[in-house]
Image (cartoon, rainbow, N blue to C red; front, top):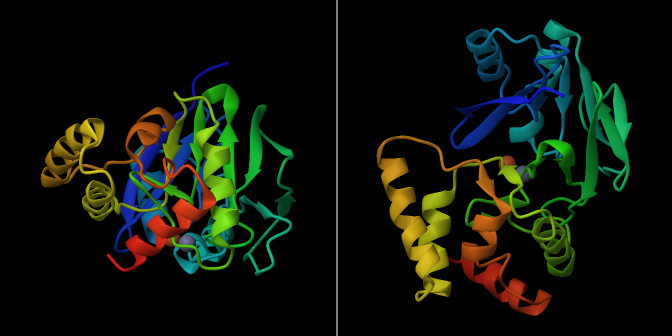
Length: 242
Ligand code: ZN
Ligand code: FE
């Protein structure tokens, strides 16, 4: 099976959009749809034709472009059937712990509640890639808006258990702020210090710090490394006030 291709692009104030393309079938998925114009521009740049939108959660900065893109491309729009909030434009649903067939490639739907109750992560195990939306960020994690700290910790644990080489795309470029905070939690973490030096250079050059990998996050992300739900909650609350 040919390799999937990816195209990451910034949009809105600090969001990332990402296109995933199968060269064999021509299928192209937008993971979330933060902004129709930015997704269209990315499609122009790649020459790919939008066939799918795969949603992680209901927040506007992830679904705001769905209706316009669907009108233009007549694409499939797939989201969590158990999402208690309305997801716009759905043409199909997936259930957590089930699989979704993206033109012959299997996505495992991982329930990752916490940031929102219906948040899901799309894991393409055979391709070694996961789309974590606003659950896991490079050196950080999403705010816990709808779920409990325990739920979010469970979600982090599920992601921590993915193969370490898994490439993780997330929804935002929050890494500088995340990294500064991470250093207050683990000032003696050498891997974290080394990583922050690289990240500062990337950001100074205007380059993204996304995607990341599970292996890198296991070494440097204070939320993944919290060790217990209680400690996770402390760290999350400290970040909220950072
Ligand atoms: Zn969100
Ligand atoms: Fe977001």
